[in-house]
Length: 323
Ligand SMILES: Nc1ncnc2c1ncn2[C@@H]1O[C@H](COP(=O)(O)OP(=O)(O)OP(=O)(O)O)[C@@H](O)[C@H]1O
Image (tube, rainbow, N blue to C red; front, side):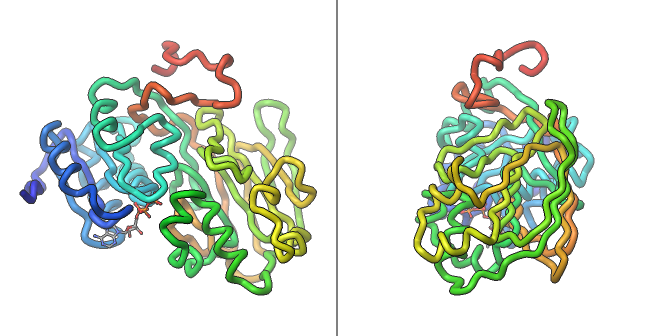
């Protein structure tokens, strides 16, 4: 059964299905589950479709589901944002990608579970971030080339998430092209001061729902209105060429790592334009301004979801402010 319906106007529930994400074996299950739960299904046929479909659906739909990986979710959020409908449209995550990092972080364990959560789960409002005029949900990483992004293996992505691209870049680029950067981070609400960093970097990683420690389950607090900025200084090259483990490189004690928490930042390349990976999608630019949009995205979350995995006590899940 195909299951796709002719896109009609005014569907309240629309599911955008990437048929080639992950191993591509999710299609029949998703189509069946989506039909059972009253979704109109729109299948992407090429890059760009998911954003376009979400943009078309959002003015009428109160629920738009993204069935794919983090890239599909990124496109759907960008489409809903382009329709200026983030306040009125809930975005549901149906994990059918390789890494499904974001889905895991919001407590969604699989396809069937995603639909259970859609029907019965709590809604939370979480932060998203914008890089120039594009949104991202997990991370923005500068210094990853489109080439490294497309060549990174599925297995590596499944194991390491976005750090797989970093690892691939490290392994395949004989000589590192360091990035001459200026990074200005704004003052934050918890006493974070405005800071400026200038120098040669290998990578600059900005996490909204992702923290770069090298650990697989490094979820950042996605409701704190802050971004976690990690700059890997060029001095780390020697370590990398000597085969230092990625975990060591990003570990808390690494001497070549600069960490900041900030609601917004600007990164200027003092040379050529740089390629950034926004949840796996490439943005090439000389200057990027990145900021959080706190609580901009409403989504159903699983029981396991914790906004801040480091500090559960501080978060009273299900408080009236954010149920
Ligand atoms: N029908 C299609 N044919 C080919 N490519 C497609 C199609 N639909 C979407 N895409 C591409 O799929 C990519 C998104 O894949 P996505 O990130 O969702 O899955 P993934 O890479 O397997 O998972 P993850 O990001 O979680 O590791 C986008 O780059 C998009 O352009």
